Image (cartoon, rainbow, N blue to C red):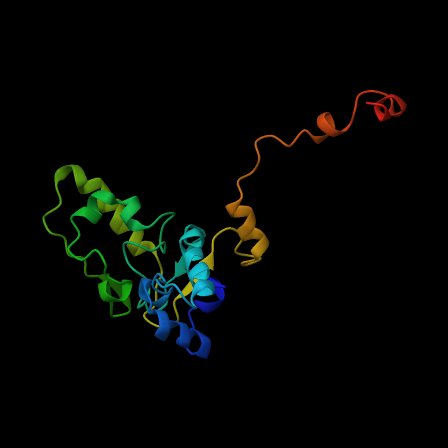
Length: 192
């Protein structure tokens, strides 16, 4: 349900109703946490699912207006604040959206990154890797930002795949034969 409501298209009436009633966070991808005693139990449980599903989502950047530069998973295997924590700490704007930091000049992308201090010698390798990464991503300054299901991009999102992600694989299968199938003849087991 969370995926259905926040599919990146803001024109649906029921999405607008939820947004007006509960507000929005994450650049409009999910609603604020629901606090209340009456009449909100269904949406409260739907909203609670956002924190569970977020690790399995990534963002395809269109215009970058709804994707947070440091916090969202959009250009690496993890959010940039996790991949480059030493640069996140010295970042001047930690809650910036991609659109606020990128610009296009003469058809090529330019990143306007501000840091609180100069990069130290021991941070140069990290900075080089960081700049190589963000400049290697091909972006355009138009189009819709979309959520992507990470687990199986060919098949897309399904409840079954999401359930499999949430339920950890069992290390050992349940030994039902050892418990329920007696090791004695059936005539004898009838009397026990």
